[in-house]
Length: 261
Picture 1: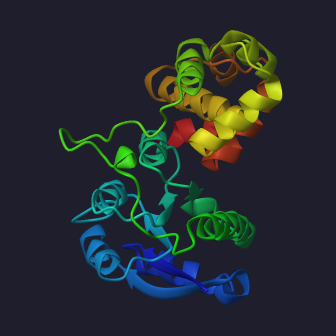
Picture 2: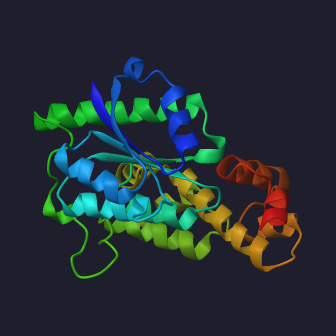
């Protein structure tokens, strides 16, 4: 059984996560829980779990700081972050520090959790087979956070992947396809797709959609532009598709999000 530490300051959410799934059927065992990052860090140092399922926003020490400190300690436990709607910057930072995935708390379902655990279980099994030991063993220094500042060195070190990320950040509002990105870095489409997923943990289309939705949220907060204009401004030429992707990623439609900002 893979060991899981659950870190969540909201008792209701913590209890819900514990109850909605049969952990042992998925090959996991809950070995501990904590209500803040500081408490969790002590537990991780004492007995590194294979997976840490952690909220991002918590008192005393948040989930991102917990992830950083765990990596500084040389512990390679897998991290899956629980996050709130629209917290894209935190999600991006978590992925940079090596988080395997994230789950939106408000729309979390048994299916989401089962799929995430299945993915993590496969990764842990593969890692154990390759290393001949626990997946939570120390990680190479090259992946440790920088000792010279608050932010970690980017975990993504592949030049073509970085080039793609920069291109998306600068041209998200344009017509971007796998074919155009492959041509941009002069690599085959299948290779680029697999390489990006391997290095970032997310697919190219997911990263592109996430970037566009993040930009759309900025427009919704700072302008009174109609939703269809905002969708077009961030690269979605089809209004219905924009609304569908936005709701899938945030749990609400653009119009509903604007009312709650």
